[in-house]
Image (cartoon, rainbow, N blue to C red; front, side, top):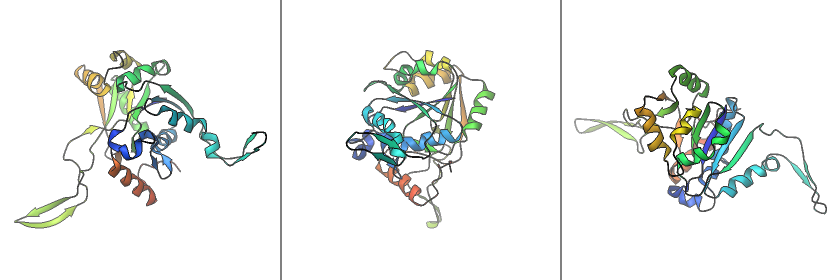
Length: 256
């Protein structure tokens, strides 16, 4: 199955980083968060990716154009310009880098990728969030429900730690409790090509104009994910992900 990734937004809430690179290229453990996302899909057998580019698209293009050289040892003859790539393991991916406009909304970006996506069911996700979602189980759930789209629902941790109290005394501290029963769309979606016909144009917001309409039509299923999920909305989120990576066992790392 193909994987479509929304990677064209401005990332204004992470301005410290996104003045230089687009949000999907902000590094975690020395690699763009986009690489972490593609690796997770890759370990589930996905090999073809469609990236919806917008803001600073040239940075993402340059990364993939230089990917082989960045991933291997190289020898360069400075006189002739001849480049020799030495043995090394490089992912067997096909990556379509699709310019979808600077100010296009999320639905419009997906619509502009339609020529690559109309030939079958595809995954859809965002270029700024990591998780250890079981994609095989997600796809099986989608097929079992028989709807046009399935999203992964998650319960993000609270921003601050909580505490248990009784009779005016603190009984215990709770580290990052879940936000009650509040489920949110965590991305990692499965989409049938017919959903593309729900998108009117560049101004269509996928989350509001398409997903809500699919829900009204009874065509939107939810796959509950109780495992790790974290978006990178701001610098605090980025620091958390970097800390988890440096600790040596990041919970979203599903590859060897």
